[in-house]
Image (cartoon, rainbow, N blue to C red; front, side, top):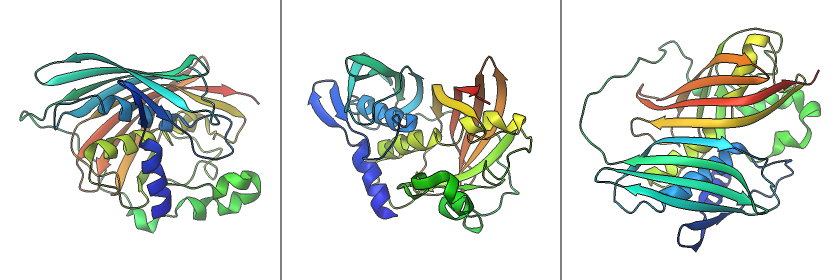
Length: 283
C-alpha cells in the first residue's frame, strides 16, 4: 500500500499561492463531500509552513467544520500569523471554497522544553494489530452493501480490536479500541507525521458516539463532524502502530461527543483527541 501512502503525502503537500495562502486538492474519488480529516490535515500543513522557528512543533489545535467541502474544487487555506513569541507561535487558518469559509482551525506551536512527565497507563491486554483483520478482510462480507467504497485507496490501516461497527450493530457499549498506522513508510519530517495523525484521527472517533445506542453509520444515521480538538504530547511516527482508545462522552440534541487517547506501540501517550459531531437519526 506504499502507493496509497505516497498519494496521501502528495495530498498534504499544499501549493503555495502567495504569502500565507496555500491551495489544496482532493483525491479523484466519488465522494459527496471532502473527508474532514483531509481538510484538517491540510489546514495544519498550511499553519506549520508559516512557523519559521526551527523545531517548534504543534502542541494543540482546535477546529470547526462549517460547511461540507466540494471534492471537485480546490481548497484555499488562508493563514493568519497571530503571534510569534519566545517559545510559542499561534496560527489561525480559514479554508475557503467558492468564496465561503468551509472550515477554520487555530493551532499553537511550542519549542521543546524539559519539565514534569506524567501519563495514564494504556491497556495491556490488547491483541497485537497483526492478529486482527484489516479493512478489506473484515468488510468483504458486506461488499454488496458497500459497493465501490470497499475498493477505494486506504492509506491508513485500521484494525478494530472489538470488531467492526457493522458486525456490532445492536450491541451496546461506550468505548472501542482501534489500532492504526499509515500503511507504508513516511518521510522523517515530524510535522508530516502530526498531519497524518490529524487526518487519521477523524476516521473512527465519531462512530464511538453511536455505540451506546447499538447503532452504526449504516443504521439510518446522518453523521458529520462539527468540531475537532487535538493535543500533541510526545513524539511518534504515524507509520508505526498506534492504539486509539476511544470513548463516548455524551449524546443529545442530535449531537455526539467522543474523546480518544492515542498511544504508541511502546505505551507512550502521544495525542489526545476530542470531537463533537452531528448524529441525526433518519430512521
